[in-house]
Image: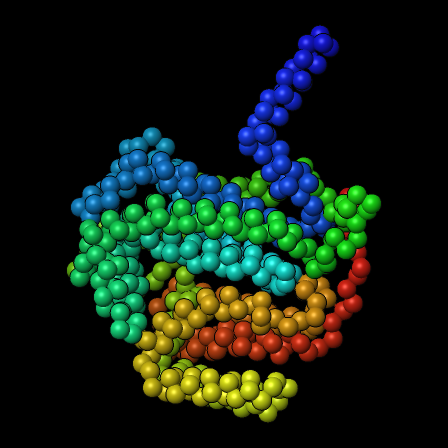
Length: 464
């Protein structure tokens, strides 16, 4: 019997050697799992990266099954969704897994980005990891928007009408670009077919490539940790970090705990509150698209609402505030900074240009620009953050206060975006919009002041 087991072991080794000579399976396994060293002190905030990958797989698999029965035709799309819900065996479950998964995707991605901000994962040498992640975030928003139209409900129809019309404000090419996106002069069957192709083929391929690049770039520079310490500064005689463990099996097992917790919440929503009171699936979207009946309030799904609030808050009074802020910022850069005179002059000229543009532009045009700029700000984080330490554990109090204020403003913008505008809500949204952009504009200042705590030489870790 022992000889038989030995023969099986030899055969397995010979087979793997044959594979490895033609495809480096063992090499990839070791480099990216078994011998990919991660710090011992990774906490629950590090669940959300692997959970993002899990949700991507869920969305792709459920999307494949939905496309087997969905009809990308303006006359049949809504009825095909009803057919999936009522007549296809377990179709209701697949549809709810997909619709809830869209929101779950943004939950884990937002938390994943937040973890990067508080622990400095956007800083050197991980700038490219962060930038690719930001591109993934934008592609994910495009993917969600394209999929939002596919049920061909009334809110989907009018929401797409509003969002696509925003492209008209782009100078020179706006009207032609808008018409190309729609494929017609109005939202129609051509629009539905284009969005179906983008949602099912193009954007998933882009997301898969971006996720692959994100992981490759991450494994090139190594994962960050809650202390913001490079674990390879302390290694043994074999080059293994003293504060590191192999990702497999240690963090594979640990991530399974996060997966179980996530699935409990995710499936709880799927089975007991798939529309979550109209937050995940709006009531107006249970009626077919009607070009003659506008919903009382046209609002996007919750993950777009902070940026939608910024769009709606862009009135002439807000532009005047931004013009004053740009002018004062240029003056402050000239007087109080120690930059070279050429840099000061460049900053002053840019500030003057912003003042001129803000005072001579329409609210709608700048609403679109500010909404886009709200996303662009995340791309600039690696260069705006000037803190001498990475982790929030050791950062100064000004940063912590600024981050707390920013989070409150972000959540308030999200809440206001889900409700119809009133004069008071518009005023609050304008204040929160100023706070949002001030967080990024003032980051070089508040990250470089205040007293930071000393960073330990080794990662802080409690055995358990």
